[in-house]
Amino acid sequence: MLEVSPVRAFSDNYLWLIRAPNGARRAVVVDPGDADPIEAALAQHGLTLGAILVTHHHPDHVGGVRALAARHGVEVYGPSRERMPCEVRPLDDGDIASLADLGLEFRVMAVPGHTLGHVAYYGHGALFCGDTLFSAGCGRLFEGTPGQMLGSLDRIAALPDDTQVYCAHEYTLSNLRFAATVEPGNADVLATLEAVRELRARDGITLPTTLGRERRINPFLRCREPAVRAAAEARAGTALPGPVDVFAVIRTWKDGFR
Ligand SMILES: [Zn+2]
Image 1: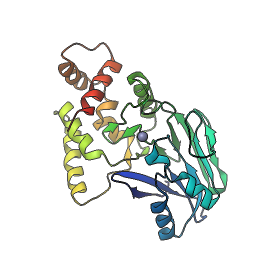
Image 2: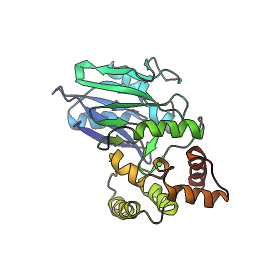
Image 3: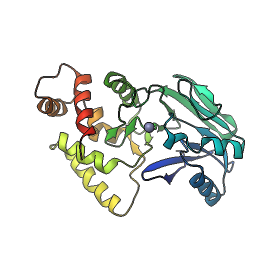
């Protein structure tokens, strides 16, 4: 299993630092929105930077990319369909990000929805999914359609149950409060909400999660469950023809949920 450390940035971002598994004292950072906390984490762990992976163009994911790439002279890998802050190795669906000198290799998945060119990185039993999937939630639809986002989440949901999912934000507690509103009868949601409430009270980190867990607690992966569908239909006040319609209703519902 990969050795991955969270680096906190801004109010609730996690920049993930992946330790090279081949014994080199080097690391890869995913979505460095800020360079300073990455420099501090590298120094703390006695590591040097080996490469940068980027999932999408939002400033809190790319803000530190230029400074880190210039200072460390490392390659940046990023989505081919989005504007990046510097030259990147452009990646699209099905490409392999091969970091051979670090002993790392990731398969690139196009996951449009939050942004149109958003990519995720899957390898070594781990998924780095940026702002596409969160624990018990998913990213807002800034650029894509509900159909695109549900298609992206369906592809992610087809990965193995034990996949370690590294999301880019600590949104788990508010997501679970929403999940419990959608599915008040889901015992897994209620038990996880209690555990996460206690963990967050101690400022603990709720990630990574696993896909097996997300399939049980995440309403956005559960649009085909009768209880989620019924909740969405009650919210919409009408019958909903299919899972994309269910997804669209609960995504809009969550946008206004406090
Ligand atoms: Zn974003």
